[in-house]
Image (tube, rainbow, N blue to C red; front, side, top):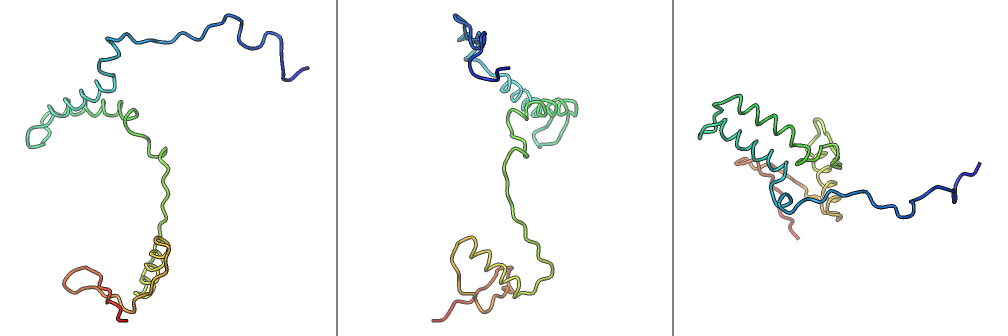
Length: 138
């Protein structure tokens, strides 16, 4: 039994045409899209469901707006699983100030690619939560 190559009856038939395409009439093409209709309707329902202070005054209208938002969301926002995200999380429990300083300096070196002189003393400012690194004296 042959498994590839030229076979009788295979391929596009002579005189065959492409599949018919849907061609939108110019009057339809220039109008509002269904996603835009849903979005505008959702926003209008949400606006009517709240008063000028932002308090909800009509729960059924807000519920309708939420239902439309749920339906139109896949067309406007990608799923979080579809977005490639990488993160490195380092957890340090009860580290000494020296360990914290070494980890911070290692992260700086990794991020900026240059080794730095490690300051001898890093303190917290008593007036605020700022970190104070003394200037190096040549």
